[in-house]
Length: 280
Image 1 (cartoon, rainbow, N blue to C red):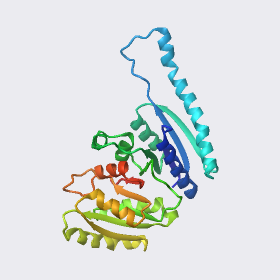
Image 2 (image 1 turned 120 degrees about the vertical axis):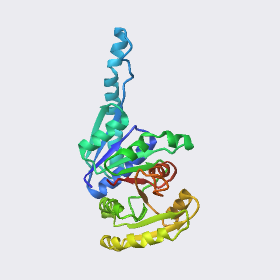
Image 3 (image 1 turned 90 degrees about the vertical axis):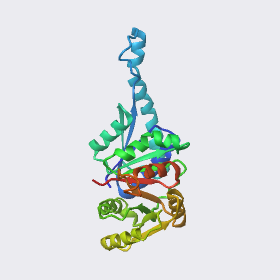
Image 4 (image 1 turned 45 degrees about the vertical axis):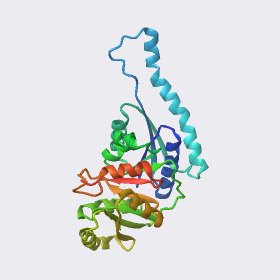
């Protein structure tokens, strides 16, 4: 891992995610680029008096001054946690939040995006979406959603990897292994068998044959239950999972158990950070 992109709105949730990004950067030697995106109000159809036009033009300066004032606290935070040696770069951009973040991620060739999430207040917010949810879905690199109530001790011993046990997901598993290899974690490949069939177990056994190349730190599990989130949450607690990774397929629930919406839902509700991986 060489480059981490950290979008921020300077909220408490973002600050918690920044500490996580610092820990990862300090361990892997990556640099961090912070980015704050702002948007001017749309006045294209409005004729403003000169005084108001001057005020509108000053938005850029205001955002710049606000961002400039916000950078020292980030540097102070890095120093306070012992990561003053981590390279920090700062970007301020005007535009649509999601589009701009995705564009910068591509330009920077980011290996990972780290973002904070505060948690949804009911299903309405989940389905309406959020910046973090949209980034999870559309980014070309892995995205780590860090819940505000998540605490990171700098150690990743156990990673959960939700899988349908299809061979195409091995590429995502390789990406996951490469990103966090410095931690030498145990990777638990899991599937929730809601229909209680033997088919999933057979798929798992076939999938497991291909895992030998990843070494002894990869194991496979089939969880039984009637509720996806409950089964996964119980597993996370039992195995002391530090990070939960999922592939963001865009497929129907019938075709694939682990649909993107579940990645998004977990990112809102779990205290465990959720990593979204992408396969072509």
